[in-house]
Length: 301
Ligand SMILES: NC(=O)c1ccc[n+]([C@@H]2O[C@H](COP(=O)([O-])OP(=O)(O)OC[C@H]3O[C@@H](n4cnc5c(N)ncnc54)[C@H](OP(=O)(O)O)[C@@H]3O)[C@@H](O)[C@H]2O)c1
Image (cartoon, rainbow, N blue to C red; front, side, top):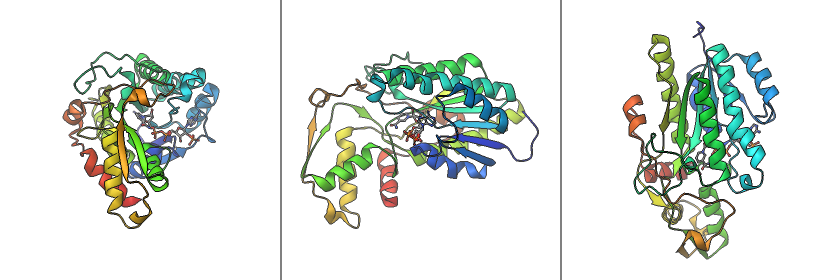
């Protein structure tokens, strides 16, 4: 690793749910150069190499992804370029300059047929194009063997961007009845929880790299506990009812439905649960319950 007094941290995807939170949590770790899509298009391999070559970061945090899961079924090549190919190019650039690459992946690399939370060594088997692309991205990074950490997360929400929390709040203000899928389980994970954990992980990883005892790896990172989309929606509405302005909620009833009753272009895993044990053991992190994190997020809205 280069001897520099202030490490340069390149954050890619500053406008995403996780990227926006990362901009704040990474600031105490070094000089953060934060880029959005207009500064760096990850679909453009040449531009990635050019920008990385100019910035020469000590740490690269890639919060970019093609996250439109259903659209990825038809825009497969673009989704693969951003999720599957670009991470490998970032890894090559990281290897050239000795940077640490921190990258995010997803529970959608699994098919969801396991009846326990997934652990890191479970065999991936994506059931949609988004999952195939994200798995290809993991494998591309691992093949390059730079210093890397891949964090698989799940059911991400925030007080900004497109996500289930904001959709439910909007629909609850517009409609008296909602129908929500109840046969997919997971752990809703606040983007801020991911960003705060990431800062802790990067700090520790940089310390390990300085001491020469760093090991690259892939870890699961999600809230503790579990629920269904239906359970998540009920809790969002319950929390929103106790908040100022709750009289604006029109919703009276939330109906549980099956996945089959709400067909979408992309298949989804029935079980999205990720076990955090390996992450907690290495980085000493204790993940909050999804209910606790949701309540704090609702306070910010
Ligand atoms: N969202 C989830 O539920 C979920 C679940 C599991 C894992 N993950 C993973 O967690 C990570 C963070 O996801 P997120 O929820 O924060 O995603 P997000 O809110 O959709 O943000 C993704 C960001 O990537 C940017 N982007 C897309 N294509 C780009 C391109 N070609 N060049 C540059 N930037 C581009 C988007 O820019 P624009 O703002 O311009 O569109 C957006 O800012 C991703 O790796 C994702 O796969 C997410």
